[in-house]
Length: 118
Image 1 (cartoon, helix red, strand yellow):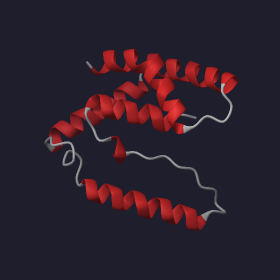
Image 2 (cartoon, rainbow, N blue to C red):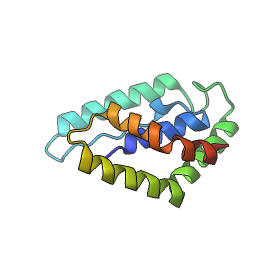
Image 3 (cartoon, helix red, strand yellow):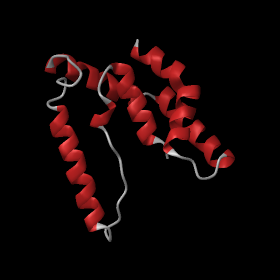
C-alpha cells in the first residue's frame, strides 16, 4: 500500500521524473491486463527517452540521482516512517485512493525525505 506514492515522492525530490516508475498488480489470470500495462509503460518510457533526457540532465547525473533515490528508500528511518504511516492509514481510512495516500505521504514524510535528499 502506497509504495507508488513513496517512490514517486522520492524520485521527485531527487529531480527524476516520477513517470519513470509504475507499480501495478496483475494476477496470472489477467494476461490481457498485464500485456496492456507493460505496453503502455514501455511506450511512456520510450517517450521520456533515456534516463536524464526528460529531466534535462546528463546520464551521469541521472545515475547519481537514481543511486541517491535508492539509498533513500533503503534507509531504515524512511522505511520505518512509511511502515508506521501505512499501518495508521489501514486502521483509520478504509478504501484509500492513490491521491489520499500521496497526500498522507506529503504530510507525514516530506520532512524526512527532504532532509535525506539534501
